Length: 218
Image (cartoon, rainbow, N blue to C red; front, top):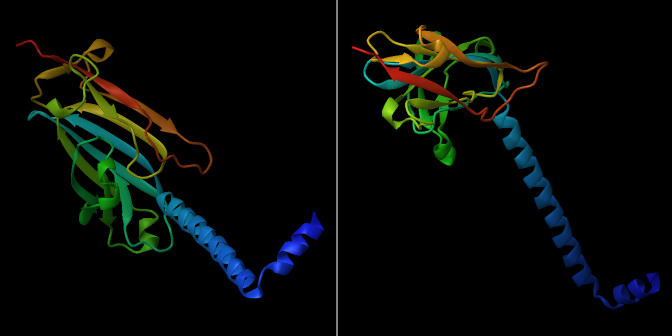
């Protein structure tokens, strides 16, 4: 078999061989650059991490409004923006703040269908590493997907990759609803919580929780 290959190579002009080698090397370089770019993208998506507590309010004016507090525990050394996601499909991001100071944000056009935004924190990296990011978003209650009569589905997902996550639901004063079932006599309860061990962070959907509401008797 080796003699056959040698015979073939003897008949191939050197210039052609040189071109073939260059094409092969260029292809290998391109594949390597794609892998590096892919790794960089994956790194950026997990460059931030935090611990999140979200309080989902049922408001008197018929909104599901969430107030989320994210303690940042993982931060890259070079920050131009923070990629965040609004967990509830179709919700409107109202504001983002750091320790009460509102900052600007813009939709991430490449991932707009995922409720993605870019937040410009305006803080140095060393300050971000211990900062609390406050996020407010809202959605009309009658637009929230339903899992049955008056059972509204709250989507569980961290604004950034999370190591711990807690979701509470609260009835604001003046709301014409009460919780159903075992929470009928309380104004608030914890829907969900999770904690990852070690230094792991999770960046994905964790399912939904049904918020069961019943009309108050007048």
